[in-house]
Image (cartoon, rainbow, N blue to C red):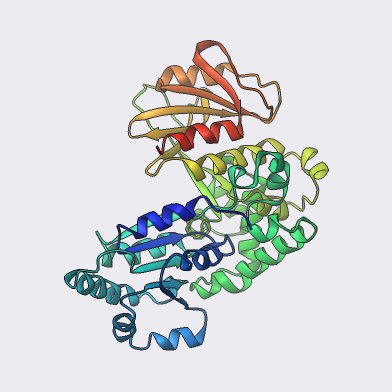
Length: 386
């Protein structure tokens, strides 16, 4: 078992908030984590994929009232959207009775859908947390290459010999079962082709018209496909940083397959040697770094990239309430910065400038730039929580 960093945060939040929504893609470990949380609370667990548990909520108000002294953990809660109105009434009823905290832990896989459903009904009564795939801090820096190749889904990472087959099954199950159950009518093969195109364009600008042309659909339809995979927390859409710098700025987002193991499976990359000789090497490393950094960034952190038409560029811009960090990602052990990075920093004037690279040492460059390993960069972001 690997101890997840978010576990204590869940426990702490439940001490102060009536309902916690834990978001994350399927198989990321939400259910396992929920069962660990159970040990700290008098609780009951419901899985809305199980018919028996669904029957228990035939009269949800009655069920909640019967268990109002317990933490009620509800898995795949987005499958029962009408439940949120009942939850609101129960939370308000419990508040009037003096029970304010630790009543509901809600687990969900589709982020925007679940956020919209819950925010409308549970405004002011709920806190949202995201469970990311395993990161370097959780598995240890000595297993960085394993994490990079296999990705951070626990079942993929923990059984390397079965990892590639597990990820193939994961992709097939999402396409053939999970996505259709959400009401999507996109043919599984079309969505697989789209997902694979995004993998080949890892870390590149999203061009809906060009990809749509390859798929034989409109750019608008392609954008809807992207919305779906972003909503399922399988793809990250990194927006460009807009600033009044008097420059022509790139306006299209960049896309990343969020889990590098899934990325490699879509591209049929099975070994580290395959990866090291593949054209996706640099962008795969960039995606790994971005996801790991965002998994430990303080709540409310906004992530962007910066690029001008003239070529000034920063891979990742983190915004902490107006304070900007500029982060460049390099796969090499001897990183060399282009003039574009310096020009981009002159444009946005970040408070800190970093280069995350594949080496082990931390050292300084000119103009206040610090070069450091991924694990050390994550430590600095984690320290901002305290």
